[in-house]
Image 1 (spheres, rainbow, N blue to C red):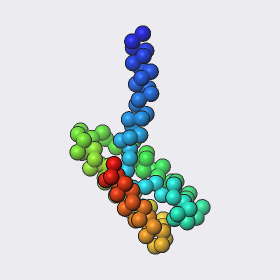
Image 2 (cartoon, rainbow, N blue to C red):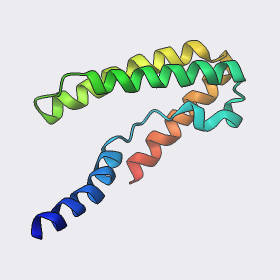
Image 3 (tube, rainbow, N blue to C red):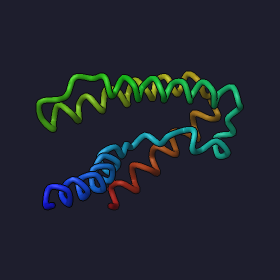
Image 4 (cartoon, one colour):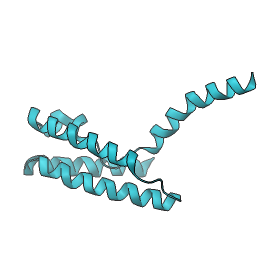
Length: 110
């Protein structure tokens, strides 16, 4: 009976823990479609890009320690940001950088 209760608690808590770890200073551009005035074509390209990077993140070899894990995540985010910038126009890039700065500032406050 205790094992069943433990498993249920684990099933409830695990998704919450994984969501908390996944926070990134790089906002998901797709959530800011109106602020960035993204076209349908841009949204399609960004959806593909994010899907590919999510798959790459899952396929990465697990890091041996927290520092290595952070370095892997930072490198992947850097690559993703470069690809996102290729999809955006110069005006959209400027707004995107403002989004990144505001998100980083919010994270520092917390």
